Amino acid sequence: MNATPSSPPGIAPLDVERIRRDFPLLKRQVNGHRLVYLDSAATTQRPSVVIDAVRDFYEQHNANVHRGVHQLSQEATAIFEATREKARAFVNAPEVAEMIYVRGTTEAINLVAQSWARPRLKPGDEILVTTMEHHSNIVPWQLVAEQTGAVVRPIAIDDDGTLDLDDLDARLSERTRVVAVGHVSNSLGTVNPIAHIAKRARSVGAITVVDGAQAAPHYPIDVQALGCDFYAFSGHKVFGPTGVGFLWGRREWLDAMPPWMGGGDMINSVSFQGSTWAPLPSKFEAGTPNVGGAAGLGAAFDYVSGLGLDRIAQHDHELLQYGTARLLEVDGLRLIGTSPKKTGILSFVLAGIHPHDIGTIVDRDGVAIRTGHHCAQPVMERFGVPATVRASLTIHNDRADIDRLVESLEGVRRMFG
Ligand code: C6P
Image (cartoon, rainbow, N blue to C red; front, top):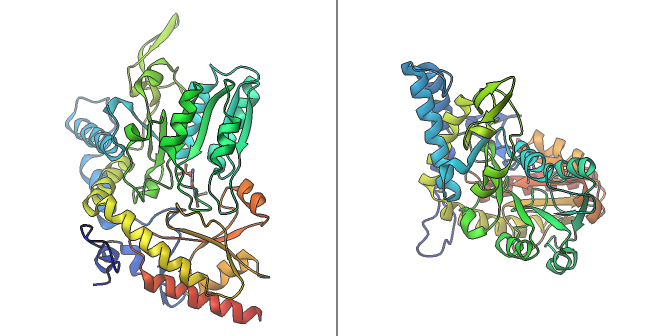
């Protein structure tokens, strides 16, 4: 068994060899080598149970939801709604009606920006984001700022990639209406103290919108304990299909917000005198949703909870420590993001070698990593680099994967002299 070594007593280590067998794609050879997939932050691979659930949906139950009285439509609706309940449990939301189906994190944040913020913000109001945000948690706020006259202000980060909480405090004022923050940074791996941030935001009457895209696959999430107002995540980062994800929001806000998109399934009545909206969650779910995706995502929630998020977090932590130590053995390697509170993301640069060259060369060795600005250009600017190489870790990675990456990087080093 290739388990995580030295797990503390009480938390059984993940059986990585077994987990790897759950993922058909990991059996692939790439460029003549066993694939080492270190790009799960971009998108996770899918276990057979997810692929099977999607196939089973289309082979046995395919129909539109909430619309038909026929058997298939009822089955499709039951599958769709069962996944909503699993999503509620996944983030410990108080009510299932607060879980809104979206295409993913990006759509969820745009929904909050357009439906919560746009009708409320006035010129001079402030939206605080952090310097480490993904563009999905910056640009929607810039758009709404243009529409309303509000201003987007960045909260600073320290040299190790930790959020500067003094700067947060300095920037919070009665003008602050929204604090938009990533739970985990996709380019640095930093884990932000959401409960603290939400409390500080609340003290000035601001709401907290959390981008959970990179946290959802790594940690148990409890929106009630976090005390935030909205929480967004994508199915494809938790081993589910693309094109499906969730926005959780507090009922008091969701009830008060107008629909963002109009269409079928979100209305109570429609006439040329005016239309009225369906209750939650339908009010925010115009049009035919990704029902097949929802079937797969339900299986993904089961898969992840079957493994246990505590065990996943522990595995992640130990592999991150190992990976950090091993990478630092590579001559000229500089890690970008070394906060003490980090999850399984290793971003780095190698002196004198462009990240894209590194990505291309290690791919020849069958190692898949991401290179670029990771849709977080302000982070690159903050650290004075155009791009980084990023290895992201997950449940099917082990020390041997890290060793393969390091070996390949040594090869790159030798090639560039
Ligand atoms: N990050 C990465 O390689 P969507 O595309 O909507 O599922 O998720 C967007 C998103 C939002 N927030 C964070 C923190 C993210 O990491 C991402 C997606 C991928 O890092 C693709 S850029």
